[in-house]
Amino acid sequence: MWRSCLRLRHAGRRLLNPPRGALTASVRPGPNPLIPARAYAPPTERKRFYQNVSITQGEGGFEINLDHRKLKTPQAKLFTVPSEALAIAVATEWDSQQDTIKFYTMHLTTLCNTSLDNPTQRNKDQLIRAAVKFLDTDTICYRVEEPATLVELQKNEWDPIMEWAEKRYDVEIGSSTSIMGPSIPARTREVLVSHLASYNMWALQGIEFVVTQLKSLVLTLGLMDLHLTVEQAVLLSRLEEEYQIQKWGNIEWAHDYELQELRARTAAGTLFVHLCSESTTVKHKLLQQ
Image (cartoon, rainbow, N blue to C red):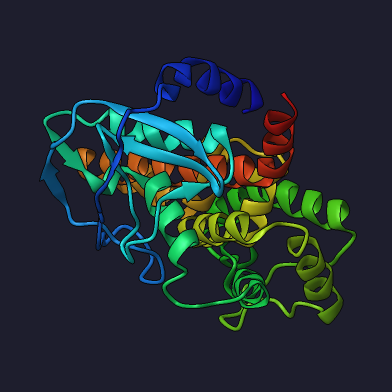
């Protein structure tokens, strides 16, 4: 993933030419049914109104310019991100739009808007508690009792990641076939709360976004720790659905679209977390040069 980020940074150097006499204009994407209600949801589409995308470094971080207009958030704040790499990734989203701006494909932009505006006004502790609460309904903690083939599939595919998480964080999580789910020990919650507290507010917005997509904190931790790839995490989160599809068949276009969308959102959220987690280091290095 880090090699990909470096390639992205290198490829995005052309975006660093600042426009002269930049004006301030508000470009404010709004609702998308594919994104949780707590995050911003952009309108579906809009005609592209700009030709060039660039980034500039200001006092508060890196800004995105559409021609001579500075991008702003839905609450009319200046769209400023903490690192050059994240700015390039966002600028690439805008630059890759064709005749029509498809806001529902711009997950990094939406995550940045949510981090900047914090529309639900939640603090760091509330974000952490919301993510850890997903343990109560974590996808891989719920097991079936039948059919035997699905029981075995869940055991073979989910047990290794569960064992990894318990060993990695020195906690007990467990699984259950009860509708009430497993009984998560208080110490497990405390350890994971402490671990998530090591992330900054921006990264936590991304973590919660990924947890919501996968419906699993355990799989999200595997992604953040580079133990799982996006493809692996998505397939593990859809294990029972994929089993049913293989058994009964599916509507091909609908299944493919849903799978690709989930991969795109999960990949964007994961990249966002990693770029935000490295923001201080990157910024410090840039300021020293």
